[in-house]
Amino acid sequence: MNKDKGYSTFTLKLMLICTILILGSSIVFSLKPRPYEVNNDNDNSNKSNEEEQLVNTLYSYVTYGRENEPMYYFLRNKQIDNKSFDEVEKLRYAFQFVNEEDIYDKTNDSFKINGDIYDKYIKKIFGNDTSYNKDKNFVIYTNQIFRNAILNVTYDKENNYYLVTKINGFFSNNDIKLFYTKFDSYKKDNENGTITITEKVIYTDSIYTNNLSEMDCLRIYKDIKHTLLLEEINNPTNEFINTLSIDKYYDKANTITYTFKKDINGNYYFDNSIMEI
Image 1: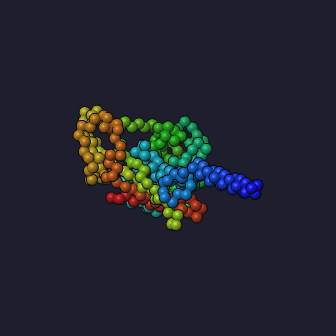
Image 2 (image 1 turned 90 degrees about the horizontal axis):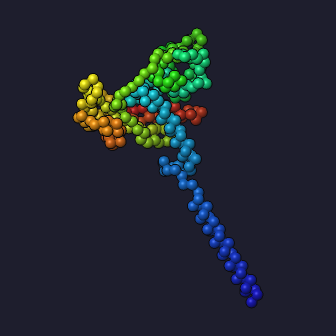
Image 3 (image 1 turned 45 degrees about the horizontal axis):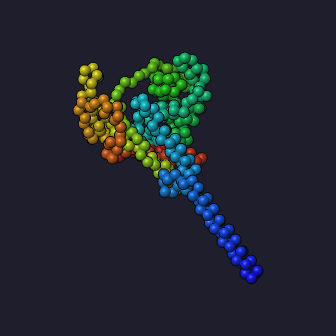
């Protein structure tokens, strides 16, 4: 009897231990964070977050300066690649990395940037093998360093620096933007070392009378040449103007695909962009 009781007690203890282990495993599994599902091949949340941060960084390369509208090189060209990229535009887009630590000899209206630093910024976006002419002067509208300003940038070849001079302030009171965009999706191809990002875009055209005090007509287009009309709104209300976005036209909007390639150091740079039209 004692032997039978001992065996029963052992069995009960074993069953109890197994039950605890099973429940414990279930609890641990249920508390494990669920991976953020951007793509089906993401295997953990850390990887997904790092990937999303990388994509956001690459997307910022091509969307820099759009709040000031003159910076929309990607939105007005059907197809661009690294080799055909306008040299002045390369200089403009590289300006996005300029910060207070880069500048010296700053005054109320000017400052200097070392040419080697600026070269590093250009190659960060366009790759180590990219070519450009440093002697190209350019103008840029920006809120960096000098707030709300137009900057003229010239290169001093003898001393290897860029002189940035503030021309004046600028203000925009347009109710309607020339274009509306929105991030669409991305895909990472590890085998080919590329990341592609797609973006949606629409373009607008507006007709005013009475000294720009009242809009008579607003047209929404799929293309920048204003040949593919999506909608025409006569006498649009202020509410419509103030709430206009790309969302209503998303399915019919134009699509731009940006491709970034990985270099031998594991860094991604802009390779090309293609507009669907």
